[in-house]
Image 1: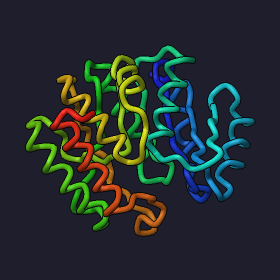
Image 2 (image 1 turned 120 degrees about the vertical axis):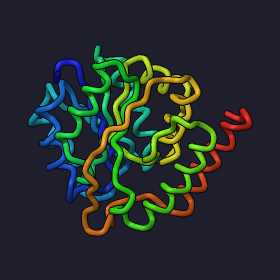
Image 3 (image 1 turned 90 degrees about the vertical axis):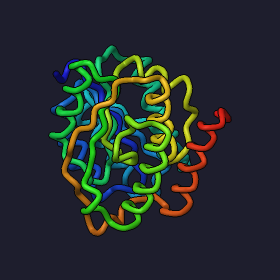
Length: 232
C-alpha cells in the first residue's frame, strides 16, 4: 500500500504535536509532504530536523508568513502531482487529533474505487466550537446534495490522483473553507465519496485548533452560496 500513497500535513504553530504525528505517519506512506505555514514557534526547526533524518521520505515546504490551511494544502497537492506517481493522496492535521492508523482505511477506500474518502467523527464528542460550525455547514450542504457526507470539516481525507489534479487546478487556496470547496467540487462532479468512521480526538480541549468558529464558518457558508449561484 505504502508505495502508492502520499500524505500531506499542513503545520502552523504545532511544535508540541507535529513530531510525534509525522513519525507515526512516515512508515505508512511512500512520501510525506509537510508544509510549515509561517509558524512562529519551533515547528519549522522540528520539521527541518525530521527532513534531515528522513531525506527520502519527507519533504518540507516553508511559507515565510502564515497564509492559511487551504494554501498549504494546495501547495502540497501541487508538489505531489509534480514529483510523484500515486494512486491516493491523504491529508491529515498536525495537532494529534487523528490516528495515523486511520490513514490506511481511507486510502483503501480510494484503492477500491472511491475518488474521495473522508474521516467521519462523532458530533457528540466534539467541542462546541467545532460541533456548532460543523452542524450548520453539514445541514446546508445536505440541502443541496443529498449524498453529502455528515462531517464536512474533517481534516482527515483521501483523494484519487484524478480528483487531486482537479482540486489543484480549480481551487486557488484559502483557509478552512478550502476543504469545504473540495467537497463541493466532488459533489458537483458526482464523484464517488466514502465516509469512513474514525476516532474523535480532541487534545487539551482543542486549544491547538486555529479554526475561528464565527469567521471561518462564515467563509465556509459564503463558499456554499457562491457555489449555489455560480459565483465560483
